[in-house]
Image (tube, rainbow, N blue to C red; front, side, top):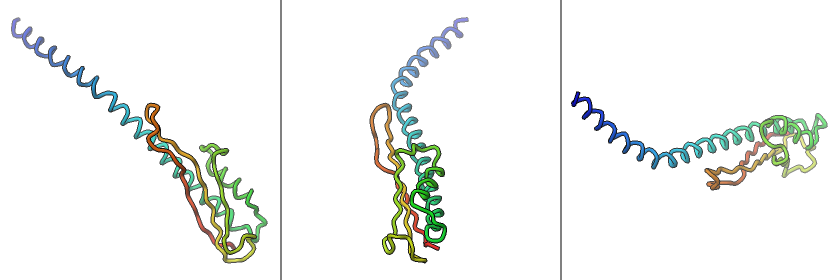
Length: 139
């Protein structure tokens, strides 16, 4: 019976130390986990912005022959990014060589921007704009 008590007492002393060490390390582990999750959300938004730029570029290709306007391109971008806040989504449609979008073969660029912020427990670690640009030739 005495051997069981000694074994039990030695484990109880080690358990207290492990709990204290875990309590010290837990906040850092939680902050790291939250940072990883926030980075994942930012990357997901970047993938969505890139896909929305592609959808806008496909729509912009038809500007010369399909009577598509820049508002139609913006609508295509908004539809391709349903998870993002449309009021924060910036869309720019430009053609440096042909601002009227009437020359076949000229290059039209669609740029989509969206703000991001990575904050961990109330501290902003990183913030800025996610941006993706696609260039397509007018038909």
